[in-house]
Amino acid sequence: MKLAVFDVDGTLLRGDTTAQVIARHLGAYDRMREMERASAWTSREEVIAYREEMAGWYMEAGRDTVLSALTELPWAPGAHEGIERLRKAGVEVALASITWSFAVDHIARQLGVTRWAATGLDFETGAIDHAWGATKKAFLQTCVKELAITRE
Image (cartoon, rainbow, N blue to C red; front, side, top):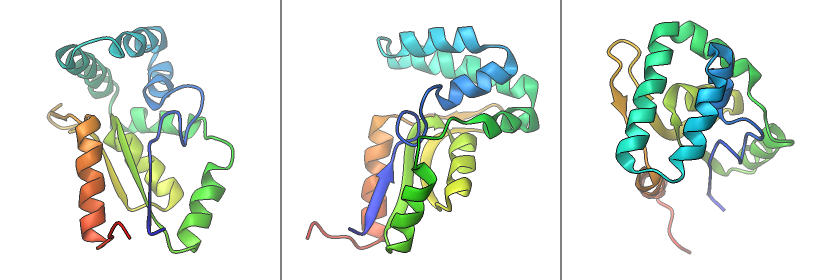
């Protein structure tokens, strides 16, 4: 095996999602849970509206405040050890998530992972670069190409 790509929420993290952890820190936990329950059944446009609402919270609170919440992430048992074992075995590890890129960057740094894809937020302008399921697929294809991995 040459490449292992992991999702974040529900895979490397258990319990509250990354967005819920941040929302709890900002006093918006109940609203975040509402949005996450609804997002499974909503249109892309509604998900965009939810992300814009969250981005508003983050922009108002400021990058440092938002990032400080990430110290409370609920890691899955063995996540760090498992990633470390893969890396020591020469497996390239990557993360692919639709959650926020600043959070995935934090998680990647904790795990020593250098490749990841996620929803971007520019804390200066509030611009959002949305990630979707198709984004994960394209990221995986890019990793495979860059690492010259074949099906064999």
